[in-house]
Image 1: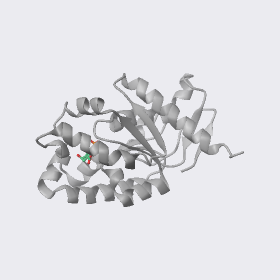
Image 2 (image 1 turned 120 degrees about the vertical axis):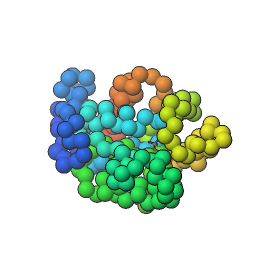
Image 3 (image 1 turned 180 degrees about the horizontal axis):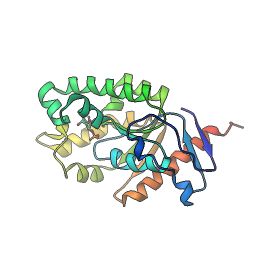
Image 4 (image 1 turned 180 degrees about the vertical axis):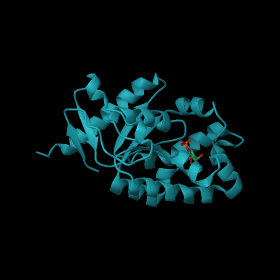
Length: 216
Ligand code: S3P
C-alpha cells in the first residue's frame, strides 16, 4: 500500500469509525519534522497482549487518522462479547464473523489504523486482503510481556486451558512465522506505552519513506 511521505503534518480525510478521535499528528508539536499521509489502512497484527488496541489508538492520533478495533466491531455486530460469541457459537463462527468484519473495515474505510484480534492474520483470505489493500504491522512481543498482560484479564477464550502458559507458547510457535509476513515488524517490551508508540510511529515513517525512494 502506498503512502505519501510529507514534511508537514497532514490530516487524512476519512469517513471512518472514531473519526472524532483523529487529531493533527505529532509533526505539529515538533516531535518529528517528518510525517506520513496514509493512503490506506494500517493493520496491526500480533498475539493477544501485544498492545494492538492501546498502541493502535494512540498511533492513530499521532498519524491523524481514525482508529478502529476489529474485535470491538465484531462485538458490536453480534451484540455479545467475544467470550459470549465463543460460548454460544464456537470458534469457527467467531472466525467467520471476524473475516466479514475485517473485510468490511478494509474495503469501506479509507486511511485508518485497524487493530485486529490475534487470530485474524492467520486466515489466508484475510491475510491476502490485508497484503493487497493495506499495510500490516506486527507488534512482536516476548513471552513474559504477553503473559503478564493477558493474565490481567480473563477475556481470552483461547487461554482458558489447563496450562495457559503452554497454550500461549504454542500460539507463538505457530503464529510468529505467519505474523513475520507483515510489512513492518516492531519489537515491543515492557516499557511505558508512549515509548512504544514512538517506536512504532518512527517504524511507520521509515517504512513509507523507504517505499517512496526509487531503487537506484
Ligand atoms: C484471539 C485474540 C483475541 C480475540 C479472540 C481470539 C486469537 O483478540 O480476537 O479472543 O485468536 O488470538 P486480541 O488479540 O485482541 O486479544
